[in-house]
Length: 488
Image 1 (cartoon, rainbow, N blue to C red):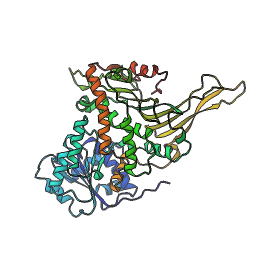
Image 2 (tube, helix red, strand yellow):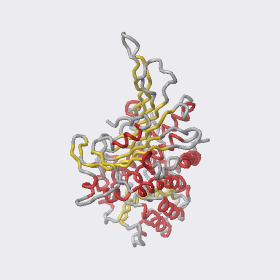
Image 3 (cartoon, rainbow, N blue to C red):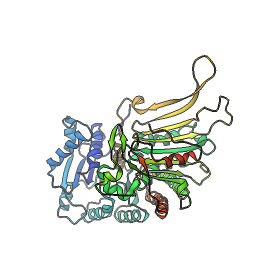
Image 4 (cartoon, helix red, strand yellow):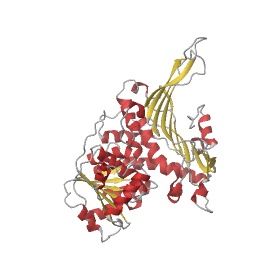
């Protein structure tokens, strides 16, 4: 039985509280932590947005979001008690608004509490909000700030944001959130590697043939079209989610589970990534853009149609990369990364494929051993091994998985990523959050790839919605005698 350890009483201010992220993820996550007894009843949650809600109207909006977006029951008495923690201040946080004293008043008496400012806003206003918080006298000794991705759109803008935030909050009070790092399977990757003597001796180029990291989505850009068209899959997904997963797979053992020990090892991986410049851009990368097709039996539009009538765009909705790490552990082992929209299934997974035995006793058709770590939609792990297929008539070898599914192995409900990360912020645990130099190292590498794409002036390859992506992505692995794990 999992034990949920309560956190100290705290005040949490959510900027952008009327937005989709807050309604879909933040408030439901806070409720579940409240329901499990982790959040003390004298904690306070203050929503901040420009809309002129009263407190009761905002609570009603939160309840509606809980019912429609999180599929919860807002009539639950425990949920009604949770609503009692929520207050609201109508405020334009980017300006010297006359309403700032109202926020000061809402937080009065909590100067000694942990005070969390969650910025669920465009990154361009992070620095301005932090400066306004300081001017209002709201930054106490126990204050910390949470920054949502994307942190900038290139290295220069990321540095500018980091510097502006650092002018108010020291690095040990800045929590750059990536919800992928809060998933059970991602955290279990560290335990799998460093708590089991079985894996670490074979976790290197000597035993591993290649690694695949996939984040596939069935949805298109939806209402995010204007934002997405200025970023694309490389900035939106690769720079943060996929590179963070790569770091956890490839990092050296830290000397402790202390936050800076783990993050220092991740930095080393980012700094060891082999640059992909103009001469490698065609052999190591593929860009794609979805066109019309069928997803789950439903006809969907092309990307430029989703943007609006008469729009055209060369923004990529799909990226596949062949990434190499220049160090002793991983030299010669390719890491294949792919992410895309309008693919045939929603799936995030890490697949570690081991080298075949040096001499095959049982024919050439035996599949290699694989370790598959599923991040979504069903978190779990599979270890694919070769066994003898039962029955007479000769010795036949079959590949079967040892399967650990969280849903079946653990009958209780376990917290989702945002629930865990929010409680880690209150506790002051930075292990699952990105350090400033991590973000900037990732952008430095990504900027080179984007710069090489722009120099080539090549358009993305089109792929039908509902397919596995562009044909060129399959050829990326086929040239190496490998193939992608199926998305169907």
